[in-house]
Image 1 (cartoon, rainbow, N blue to C red):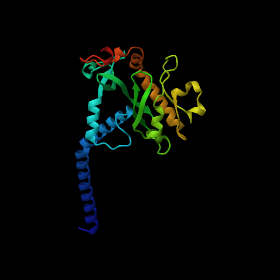
Image 2 (cartoon, rainbow, N blue to C red):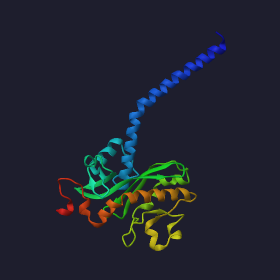
Image 3 (cartoon, rainbow, N blue to C red):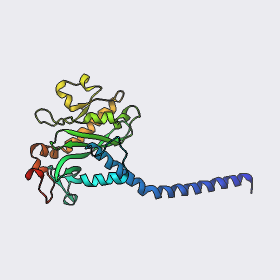
Image 4 (cartoon, rainbow, N blue to C red):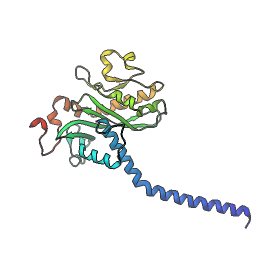
Length: 246
């Protein structure tokens, strides 16, 4: 056998061996990777309601423990009623994460999915129990340009959402928009509470994110309206009465 043939066979053998090793590694790590994704999402949910600090490192076990003790996943019916997942079987519902303290809802978190400039943007937005004030916002996955649209995952941008209102002074739904620059310079004073500062050089990212947030908030408007009008109707369907009823 010639040296050339030996070299080709050796290269083919190495390719096969490396391919098998990579496949085995990917398969073996798949479960751990999925768990890491779940933990990262739990962490972002906790960020929105300040149950954990962005300045501290937490182990996966700590994240799971804090989440299980404070956050419960439910479903929202088209009428805005919060029900257990088993009650929603076969119905058109939306997922919702509820921050509960002593059987009383302190805030509710909704998943955000928006089109971005280069791909999908995924995150979470928390609203206070008044149904109109944003408690927090996070982005856990996106494909935006680093240094430009990629700033949406930075703390400074996300903290702009805190305290903003999704309704106007008359209680009408208006959502939240990303301004084309500084809010104080670009938006009339009476509308500032519905806008956040934009990112320099990332106008399109802000535009897409604004549309995505508005679309998502409008889908959850029935439950938000329920909170704004009558919190008792929105309490968890549990045996223990809500704090407001005691």
